[in-house]
Image (cartoon, rainbow, N blue to C red; front, side, top):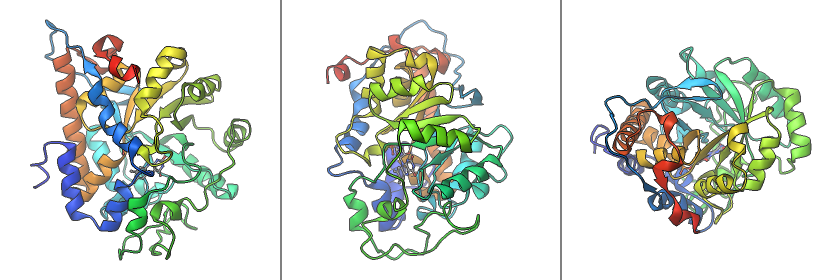
Amino acid sequence: MSIPECLNLDDIEQVATQKISRKAWGYYYSAGDDLISKTLNNTVYQNILLRPRIFVDCTNCDTSTTFLGHKVSVPFYVSPAAMARLAHPDGEHGIAEACAKYGAMQLISNNASQTPEQIVQGASPDQVFGWQLYVQTDRKKSEDMLARIAKLPAIKFICLTLDAPVPGKREHDERTKNVASNLPVRSAVMGDSPSAASTTPEPEGSGGVGKALFAGTAPDLTWKTTLPWLARHTHLPIVLKGLQTHEDAYLASLHAPQIRGIILSNHGGRAADTAPPAVHTLLEIRKFCPEVFEKIEVWVDGGIRRGTDVVKALALGAKGVGLGRAPLFGLGAGGREGVERVLEILKAETETAMRLLGVERARELGGRHVNARRVERD
Ligand code: FNR
């Protein structure tokens, strides 16, 4: 199947699966233990029903929105995901070029395979990036990175990931270890110099790319110590990623305005297996502490396959919707062009879903547009 022949994100994943190395596939596809959270992510939106209205003029359709005050053309964004060059030499910079074409925001992983400087190079002035941080046990490494990020005006905020102090047990990743690949499997970002894209092969017995990448990640972060430390080392707004309960969402909202947003996520099912899909947490927040939506932006990710999924998440109160594996598989299927196709398909599907629902602007989506009772019962 050629890229233009791919009609949906599953087609793209299929094409990529044929093309990329087994190692890349094992790393991207993998999730924790029995893939229960990953499977739930991929199916939960099917249990939310749309409530389309009639007699609504849908000549125009506006998918634009704002993230932390920055205008973007689409309400979905590229989630931080490590090691894009395992899929294709275009890497994270190729993803950035595709995002430029569709006015989409991109979050750059702490463990990206290109440096942040390389990734944002040539970005248009209105392009929006965030940089995702895994705080390192050696704090100096993270402090140096934050200082480098401060010099890149394209990067508008820091996204601090908190759901994976250690990686989940990812058996597809472990089983494909040490398969020959001449692409880097270690992070360029944490190398010694901005151009230090390591080509070190994954060490024998490392337990997969995931474990190798997490080797220096700090397990001792707390509300009390980490946020003041971060405030000392960045002036950028902060978004917390990986919240999985309404209690933590509420606590985060108490830290506004230092914290400007949260991402409800179970890390694509790659952290605690049987943790809930983001939609469950979104529904908890609606029920127990809806004031959170007023204080901070709430974004979600995990299992987004269709424009209807995007529309449902927005209707339930999410301001943004992240894509993790889809852009990586886009890269694997056809480099930058493959990522463009992912964004093109999802934008067109989102527009169709909005029109069929009777909604002219993405910003107008609300609880009245969905029936989530089947998920609420869980
Ligand atoms: C991730 N994710 C991730 N998250 C993060 O905060 N920092 C990271 O470096 C990575 N790396 C990473 C690599 C790969 C291969 C995957 C698949 C995922 C998690 C990611 O940001 C996002 O939360 C999920 O991938 C969303 O789920 P879907 O869209 O993959 O179903």
